[in-house]
Length: 279
Image (cartoon, rainbow, N blue to C red; front, side, top):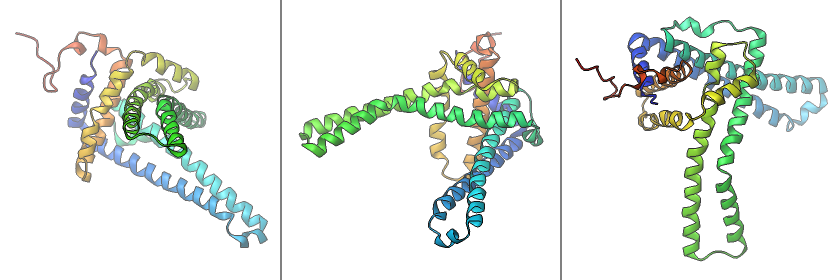
């Protein structure tokens, strides 16, 4: 099974509506940056409020400021989750047929909004815990090395050997951990197809769909890593970022539609072109 066809489909979409794809990505990235700034400011102000002794003379003002900044942090995190989902939803729909920019703002019910915010942060928490589990050998080894060096030290040969072993633990942990969290990669697509789907059911179904595909999907994402490293200037980023988001959305669509099982999707890829049938 290959997902190289996802890049072909993404290229086709970029030829059709590159401007809208770029505009949606820019709007989503700018909105998330603003919301992250708002969250950071709210948290910093909450931490600084205890240092203002003058506020203690007016408990009502203190309570109002605490409530304001707590509300600001909660609202920023909720809107961040919604913007992330709306961006993923737009690109997934765009994988099927060209979308207008206004489709980004398609209506969400209050119930769906609450569910999406809960789902977003639950998925991130599960992903972090899952990822950290694969880095556990590295953390344990690094902690043991630090305690040993602090207590009695190590011979140079043993020290370098342990460092090499820890580097191997780190690299393998990062790769296998990144591949493992791809079990959650189809959640947004599933919720786009069926907004009434429950959170737990979505997580389970995404894991079922991703069974056997985690490493393939991880490699598909990692293919863009060298491209991102080359995006020193803004202009190439405006090409790579929408192309990456659209490729991932097209890959999700291929998997969910089971197109990877059809003869069309099994044709070989030659320089990002489908091989033509012999005459």
